[in-house]
Length: 252
Ligand code: SAH
Image (cartoon, rainbow, N blue to C red):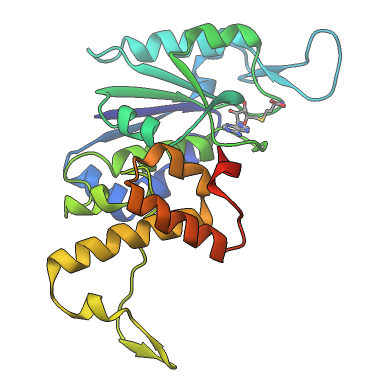
């Protein structure tokens, strides 16, 4: 997989992308990373990428010409046409399902905004526009890092142990089950007995119920899409009642 960014702060990516799991995945050849500097596609002495908005208003907008020229040029630099992702609070809310889809793309170009955003005409270059959530960031670089991080860990082999990605939150529509490490007893708080039993079938069963319970407690909005059995619904209702969250019907 080939991941590329286009931004006016290309230097911010490298430390993160070369650390920990992403760094190892890069070393293992699972993805290559290129950070392009948008200013390389300007033609004036000051390497200008922004201008003031027509119609007045505060702040500066990213000009269309360097963005168009850069995206076209970068696209032609490799055989695979890149899947082009722009970032904006207007975009579709990024989630694990989108991460899984992106993890299968051969090549992605992330275009990161700054200032008050971009000239509206650039969005025709986008295959999709993503938002991290309902808040405003200073630039698209953090959004690109979040999306790259979430997608790379889903490339087979990135996590070393292939089970880990399958067990994680959202992979089956539920949050992850509760986990514990040593000591088995900490200041009177004991780890659930079954986890010490070595009985893998029982442990798997407990984990599924733990995932249902935690989802009911923390993110009841996820339950509807999780394909629960009748028994699991019963458990979810009880967990929600215990958490003072009312009826499951309220959630729909
Ligand atoms: N004036 C714009 C915000 C511009 S913020 C508005 O009100 O919608 C500058 C840049 O940061 C954006 O172009 C985008 O690339 C990035 N950005 C800001 N918030 C974001 C979010 N929630 N998700 C993804 N990218 C975001």
